Image (cartoon, helix red, strand yellow):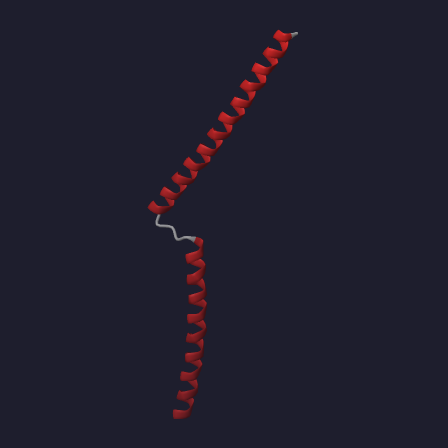
Length: 81
């Protein structure tokens, strides 16, 4: 009976160690993939989402200002004629 318990303990210890190793491998793989994707994004000269969204807001504001200025110019031209 003692030998069976020892064998079961050894198997449980090996399984626990295997789970730890697999967990570390998964974590390392995830980090490696993230690093590679970031490298590819840098090479492709991609813009981060937050920067894109900030520029999108600026573009909308500029468009609104441009439309307002266009209306003012049209009104002034009507007054001149």
